[in-house]
Amino acid sequence: MKNLLKQFQEIKKFYRKYLIYILFDYIKDSHFFDMYIKKYNIFDDETFNKLKFWQVEFEDILKVKLFDRSSKKIKLTYIGETLYKMAEDIFEKVKRAEKEISRVIEFDRARIAIGASAIIAEPLLPSLMKEFSSIHEEIEYNITMSNKEHLLKLLKEGELDVIIIDSQHITDSNLEIIPIEKGPYVLISSKHYDNIKDIEKDPIITRDVIQNNNKAIEYIEDKYGINFTKKINVLGNLEVIKGLVREGIGNVILPYYSVYKDIRKGTFKVITKIDEIKDGYELIITKDKKDLSQITKFIDLVKSHKIVMEGSRN
Image (cartoon, rainbow, N blue to C red; front, side, top):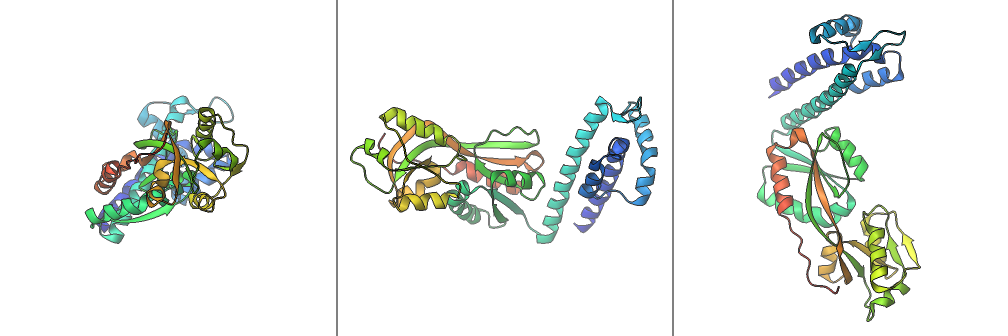
């Protein structure tokens, strides 16, 4: 296995040499050049001195012009720009592949790095991982909890294999997005209300980062002819919000999957559910890892994990 890693590193060195040097004239006079060297750590003195020769040689091999030399400032041609973007993509994949090989060598067994946002991790991950571990004892895993932006960054850098986040509009050709079932929003409280209209007297807890939260509040107001005049906006995590509801400070509208355990335990009462507004979560992986056995096994398990909502008032 160690010989495989050594061979892979040689291949990586070859690719970097022949795909980066073509961009030398384009980036050498800008601050981006230093950033690029630090990012990929690819240039030694010998390589650096050969860059200009390689640049012309590579143009000859491809039989296309990669640089526009008609003015003092050399620029990339359209084809050069295209190759530049492809090179970036190749390097990111090479970095991820190298990390995966190193990880297999280090642990000598399959391992999966999972990332999840708080609204997913707190209610769903414990039961998911318990089931996953019982079925696939041979696969080790670690878990990272963070915000969605940071998780996506770690995924693209190869630090994570798969992330689970609430539904987002993501357009990235390198990512595979796997939607999981959608469920309704629910208005929950620790109190009992004989008349649903009375709920407007208590504060409603809002959280702008929860998709469709404000839309669900407006729907409830329109449907029951009420107006939430007292609002508490919370930027903390899900447990903070649930703690406020438990203490009777306010009520909240959340996706059912995020609070279903508390509802089943009787901690919260469902005042009403909102079938007209649904939300789910999704798995995201990089396309180059979608066929790895440990990842496909994890995906299959998450897909089969159904959360059925019990009857409640509409």
